[in-house]
Image 1: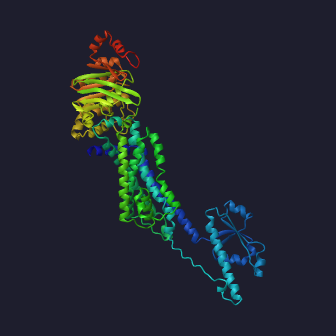
Image 2: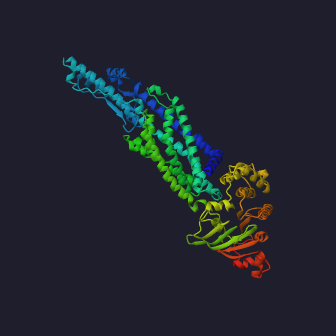
Image 3: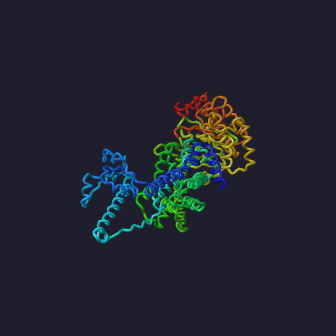
Length: 391
Length: 244
């Protein structure tokens, strides 16, 4: 055990002297998650605020043909802009989300009591357009319903004659749950932080040592190779965990700068959140450090290892990407799958939910077993003659 | 005391070592001489248990390397072909690392380390990071690192490779000192002059085999050549890969 500790301490000391490793593990890596979080939250908050209060600015063609309509829409939150010369071009060029066009036939039809028509010109392939279109359409329909009721009433009938059914929408979502899709990207940044925290160390401690030809003298010492490996893995885990810890702290601080209260949202980033995330990530830290070492052990040089590892870095993105596109209902067995478990757990925590002891236990057990198995394979690779010989 | 019996090692089709046997006694310098690619480094690597022989036996101070490789490594001080220092550590820290891997206590480490630093005349570089060291400074540090645990047996793979004249002379003096301390010194070289000047016994390796193992005088007698250089060429069968 003393030899393991010796290797661990030497690797930590040596790598703290390496600027690239320190910058990646202690600065770039940890800052990634909080920065993206603040960015995403701000985008989301702006969107939510847009939806609710802001008047909807829409260019109106032929506003003078229907002054009553425009007044009614203004009362419902429309901000009519001057007409544009070419509504279709304006929409396709994304200068406007939607253009309201009142045709010349409108006043005549309205006065006669016939069905009058207005046109909405928009491009549904523009992601942001749909909320404006829906809002404007809602305003127009509301106006139509109101006028219809008045007409029916003036003929001495009940408005129920023309309105047999009323739909009352009761949306149960909260701003926090609407943010779910964004939150499901966040776990990836924590995983990335862990990955980057350990990556340069994993490269340096195996491929780097091999390239600098120091592995051969090291293995001549009377220490079993698996002990050397264990010491190195501990150093990698140490750096990854430090990265993660710094990241969580930065995250909690960043959360203070996000005006979540504007949405009536409460982000619980206290010590409990930090502990839960650390415990959930612990098995992943171990698994990633052995995986990185295993991959680096196959590379002959620092550069080669770097290439392999940047490909490996894409794998942790998969669950985040898949889950943010295809919403899957959380089930307990998912916590048993490394990466997926962390994904589910951290997303749940961010959404204000909680993770049960059973779920955490499942993540820990399967993650540590997986790390141990990959560790056995890595130890096998470390035992090979090929590894020590650089020439 | 190092004994090697009938070592074999093949890499795919290539038989790098094909039946090498020799012994190196305590209090003697044994030179492993052979052209480049003769199998010297591979033989030594099997000796210090970095590689497993396909067949044959390695015994160090009576311990079988196949049975207890860790114990064998404890008996050896090795300067491998790959010097590989940790460039972000100072020379002293490099030495300390290996000392601790040997499980030495701190007081003993300090005593041995300072003695080696003095013996190798490296006081001026001891607290510098090894990045940017000259070849000679690197070899000195690597040797101090290899001998920190006071091993009875010292294996040096091409110890003067890349050194200038001054450093080479210092290295030779150091090897003679190790012999006078009663250690078993085994080193490899492809430089005849060096082997002739230092060795009590010479083991000549060519094409993965031992072609002669004698004292320098016996070698001259055996070949009937008064000049050692001519004797080597005659034994090996060609001049290829040797340096005077």
